[in-house]
Length: 67
Image (tube, rainbow, N blue to C red; front, top):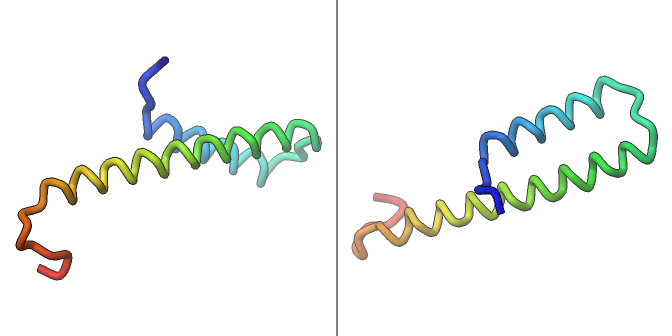
């Protein structure tokens, strides 16, 4: 399995949004684009959660978000 690339996924999402906003996309094609966008969003959210968890795991125990 290829390594997930957040930046590429984000650019793909931007491209899908641009296509949907600017083109007259047939319904079948639109459905496929929405499915792909949903998958990319899910993958990006997961990556962001992983990064957040890593950052929080590396915080000293006495440090809070308000410090």
